[in-house]
Length: 238
Image 1 (cartoon, helix red, strand yellow):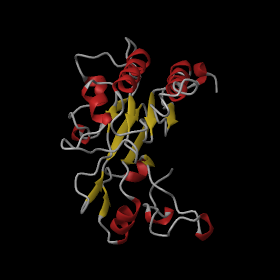
Image 2 (cartoon, one colour):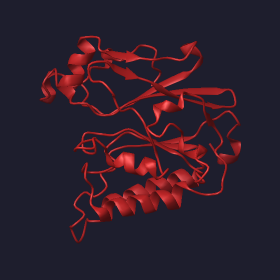
Image 3 (tube, helix red, strand yellow):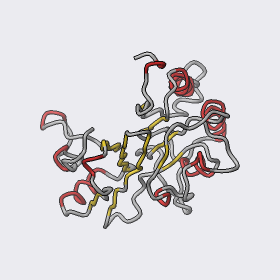
Image 4 (cartoon, helix red, strand yellow):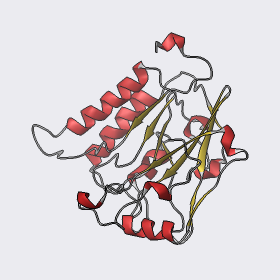
């Protein structure tokens, strides 16, 4: 669909995942491959006039990316996501879903033109004494909106990011990576809860999750080292 034909109610988003920035960064031939590919994603989002980018985890290959890798990622995000343009949708959910208590385009000190929302994966998950991830560093710089981190693994509450553009209402449920066996047990023990807005049938509900999917007995993945699709709520549309 040509960009000019998109209606005022249409949300355009680019979905990306597993960028693995920093992968083989010391290799003379392939060292910049992951960064180049991520820049292509950002370029496509800009050229197609996407409203936002949704990243499904493992933005970084390691949870302690090198200073060079982190600098390059921040530089790309600044060049492609910041700018004087308007954000054409609004986030209407409780801002406490984000660690800083706000969505980045509402930061008075930063001009965000194309917001990026992300969860963490199994490669770039929080850790260390501070229990922070590289995504926390990007968020405190107002470069991304990091969500989907479980505060209590004994009571996992999945809260949606609620977006509205004209008459379109979108609910994005995000859950950053949790060890597959543990999350499987949590679903089985009914320790995973989904908070929904009033009248969830009036929202288009999608979920972004970074886990192994059950592939059947022939895939070589133990039954409990994955998440079965039937574990997810039936109200999800995608």
